[in-house]
Length: 230
Image (cartoon, rainbow, N blue to C red):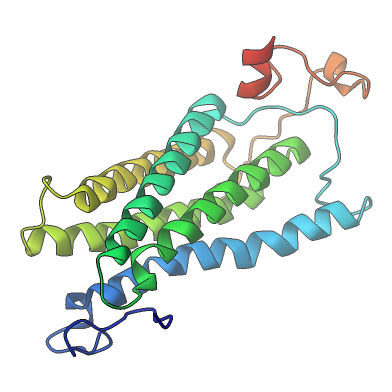
């Protein structure tokens, strides 16, 4: 079967818009790609600049760091997000196999969401390591956009009576909740660290013992995975 983003079933045109673009499921799925593409487009240059320039203001290579508020909760939510994206991708593949033509919109947003979520982990770790919270604003915008686009998809599901008996709807509900919680984590970081929208940002420096470059893993200044291993 030829590759097609929207596909066509029984001679219908998947790109056709009759009443509203939001009534076209393919368009809604394409809209859900926007936040993921945005995150990848913005974060990749930042990561490359940070890795490529030791004299850059964004120092990536550093052995000690301070955790931002909600650090462990963010890791837990992100791993849950990755798992749900895997489920969403699998559901999309199974649904696509039931179609007469390929419908890339059924599983491509889930695949891109998994890539974006993985990138967010790497990006957050490096920003936290560099102790430069202003760059977290990119993640905040991403969570907001992802929450809005996924909420639109859930709204259209409920409007067309696609309820909890459908796995796709359940997955969408989980994603909306996870994006909302991750967005709340970012708001909490802004509230505590005041790195944007405030005239007096809170500057936090690592303790003296953690500024020793020979110290790499010291409780509680390590990530969640390191805590599990110790």
